[in-house]
Amino acid sequence: MLFCVTCIDKPNSAALRAATRAVHLEYMIAAAGRLRYGGPLIDEPSGGSAGSLFVIDLPGRADLDAFLADEPYNRGDLFQSVTVRVIRQMVPEIEPGFLLQELARERAEFGKPA
View 1 (cartoon, rainbow, N blue to C red):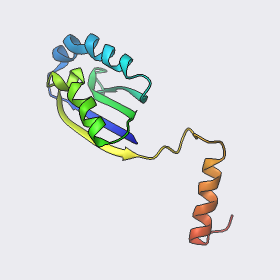
View 2: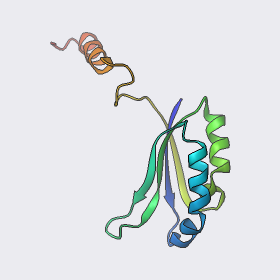
View 3: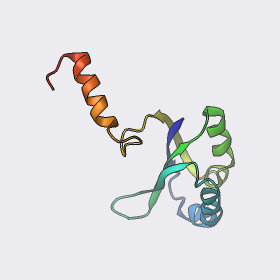
């Protein structure tokens, strides 16, 4: 399953983020085979980090919960909130032609001309 995880930092937590960053990076490097995408959310206009976002491929929600329980930023109480959503990858296409097949299915289902 693909999970999109959005984490928002607590206010005034830049020092905690900085102090935990190296161990967080080590954790993410160890999980690289499962991570599809990720990075810091940038606060505008300051340019500092406002949180984190990542998409991770895990067998199920229990696996994600275990991953998050051990994640250094989360373990260090950096986050004000963590939101998890299951997603279905559309782009980039995993299989060439997938989007064209989806479009044809959508048009057939709703009677729209091709």
